[in-house]
Length: 121
Image (tube, rainbow, N blue to C red):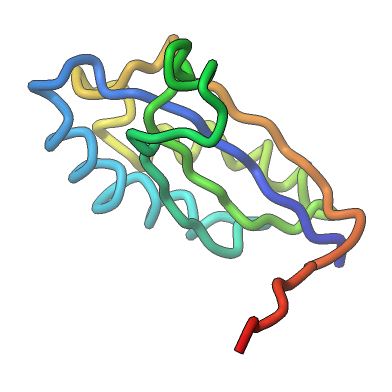
C-alpha cells in the first residue's frame, strides 16, 4: 500500500471561537474522519509564534492550524467517496467556529524516507 499524507489547514472563525473549534476538531471531526477507508492517523499542529526565517515572522502563514492525516494513497478514491459521509457524520462540520471557505487540503504521496536525525550523544 502506498503511503501518503493529507495536509488540512484551517482557522477558527474568530479568537472567541478558538476553544469551540479545537474541541469540535479533536472531539468530533478527527474521530469521524478516521472511521473512513484510507485514513490511518492524524496529528495536529498550531502555528508557532517564532519562525525560522525573519520574513515569515512579518508575513505570517494564512492558516494557524495544520492537521496531517496519514492516508493510504492506493485508497484515495475510497477516501474521496467518503467525504460526503464525513461531512454528514460531523454535525458541526459547518459550525460557526470553523472557517470552512478558508480551509485547504492537499494529498501528498510518500517518495522516500523517513530520514532520522542522528543522536548527538
